[in-house]
Length: 369
Ligand code: ATP
Ligand code: MG
Image 1 (tube, helix red, strand yellow):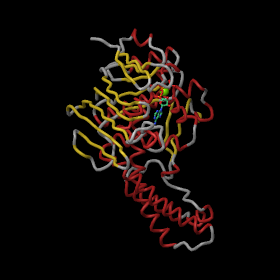
Image 2: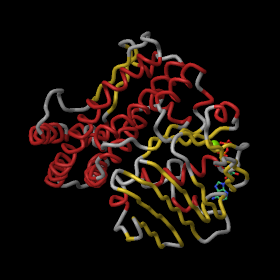
Image 3: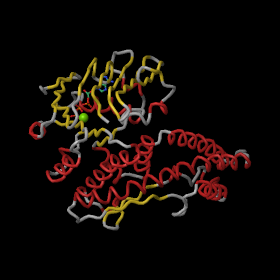
Image 4: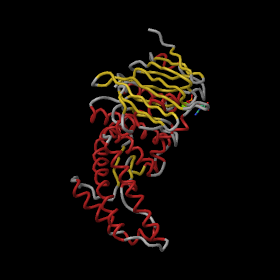
């Protein structure tokens, strides 16, 4: 997959822009607060369905503007494609190749990108929600239907939690309703489990190989999906039965807690380094390597499932890696398209990158053919 052009209007500090990219390495270069990350954010909206750093889309609207419009032109194994996303007032519009899409789930799975930015270190350092987010975002790019299962699960969970909360407060909560929501949750949870389990199995061999390569064979990385389902169950109906059992056998305890204590919303992804939990034992350098290994593996799994590599968006992270790891990444990604941001340009000029100078939301390509 190759992105050829990104255009935006009224987005963040961008009044209007059109940036062309080369195959291979591209650098968005400029001083702080000029709009480097804003461009990556705009591109990644098409992969994730929404911004990776704004809570609400209205934060993305340029101050004083009445809305924004984003467009990418790219090519994939089926040919030339375009995606558009705009928000003006309450009017939200998504288009693929000029045709209106019904919603975000129709947009997902078309354009795929791996984003690596400094906060991603939280995947190792942070709580389980960071690791679930990693899985959710990665899986939804390969299997867009995952998003529907997940949002249906969350709705059922909210309903069940409302009843449990009422019970905790001593208010009336229909026992039959709690059971019904347990069955609904089990149905969607079983799909989520199967997809997460398969995804983790796919990413495992890549991440341990990459970690071993980064560390010249010194560090062993292992990942493990942690859920309420005993390992080894691969049949969805059996998984569903297991969830029904878990959800219906814990209702008394959940009434005292006022919340659902089991299910995919409590899952975790255990990341181990040399056999130990990396959240507790990994050094800073090891944490960085582990996240790097996960991110590069995410790209490999996209290739395995979808048949082509994604675009790699690296926000300010390469400069934080030591020279050896930086070289490993750039070598490993040779032949793939990368867009990186940095305040430094010298090293990338030497690597033949297309340099795009970023100043106050203006993007000028310094590259001449
Ligand atoms: P750094 O090197 O510090 O990471 P950057 O070039 O990546 O900088 P961005 O995060 O892309 O910087 O852009 C930040 C700029 O965009 C800031 O000046 C910020 O005030 C501005 N900005 C963010 N949101 C909006 C908005 N909705 N309207 C106008 N300007 C905005
Ligand atoms: Mg930035």
